[in-house]
Image (cartoon, rainbow, N blue to C red; front, side, top):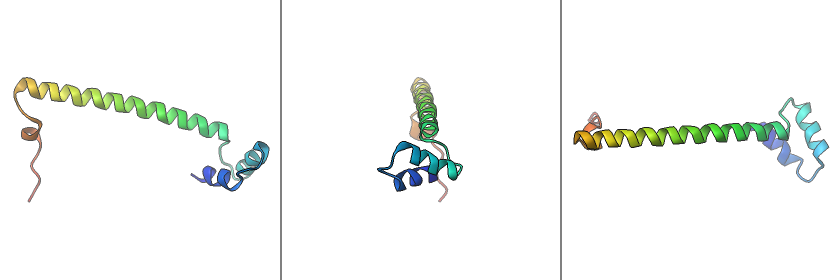
Length: 78
């Protein structure tokens, strides 16, 4: 991300200088970057939980039907 490069280049400077450098390049402020990371982490966590629930449900259904996941997997073309 370009904003991270600007922040790294201004490491050790005060907060106002970093925010000014970001604003000059029309990049989000550190606060906005933090909000984006928080939203992304929350969304990623939700997706992981949904994936886990789906794979668990599929495995349970396959056990009930008496088929193993290997039997259900499509064969690779040779």
